[in-house]
Structures are given as C-alpha cells and as structure tokens.
Image 1: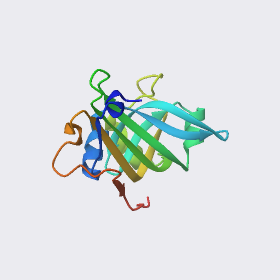
Image 2 (image 1 turned 180 degrees about the horizontal axis):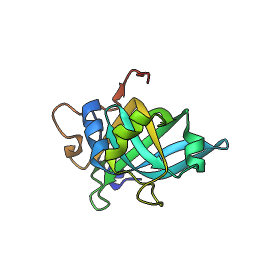
Image 3 (image 1 turned 90 degrees about the horizontal axis):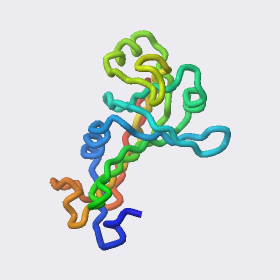
Image 4 (image 1 turned 90 degrees about the vertical axis):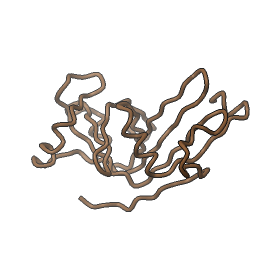
Length: 163
C-alpha cells in the first residue's frame, strides 16, 4: 500500500488529457492479459501514437499469440517511494498484431524493442485505447496536476475506432 494513502494522503482522479500525457511520458509499462486462462503481466517498452499504445513482443512468442485480438489492460506509473507522490494510469482496449506493410512502416520510427530481446525484431502490437483511467497520489493534493484534473473516480470512455 502507498504510504500517503495510509497516512491521510490524497488520491485524485485525472482527466483523460492528463492521463494521455502521463502515459506518453514514460517508456515502460505493463500489459495485463490472459494466458491459458490465467492472469499474466508483461513489462514492455512502449510509445503512444494517437489513440494507440504500441510495443514489441518477441517474434512468434507466447505474448504476441496471447494478445492478438484480446481485450487487455495496460498500466504505467511513477511513484516516489519516499514521499508516495506519484501517478498510475490504466488503459483498456483490444490488442492487435500490426500486420500491414504501410502501418508497419508508419510505426518504424518509434524505435521500439522487446523488453529482454534485441533492439529490433519482434511483433509490433498496438492497443487501441477504449477506456482510460488515472489517479495521482500526494500528501497535500499536489499530485492532481491542477487545472481541473481532480475528479475522484473519473473515467474517460473513448469510442472504439475501427481500423
């Protein structure tokens, strides 16, 4: 449990725009998926491109196979362990293997690599964000980022875009 939450710290919901900025601000996140009917989590390097979270999975590996056309969650965060000030953003959406040549070429500049693998290679996976939630923690409420981002329990629902 986060220290600030136990000792009277504040937890603030974040706006959709703030969640997107935070998600894009860190290169590492966790994809939560189902593998053989059990929950699984994988750490991945990612980038945000439009309404998609994009990352590489090992070529032909279990992760890519388990993710294709599955609804998954994606989490990224940053928390200072000393002050318990930080944030967590969770996105939910369908994961798809990027297959089209034009789309692969358009994402080539992201410089993505698999977490434990080579600098290049592996299947490109995109998660189209359909639900986005975020919370900030802070001892005095400064974690919300100001400017109207405080809305406890705020959920931003983004319509599914085909393609």
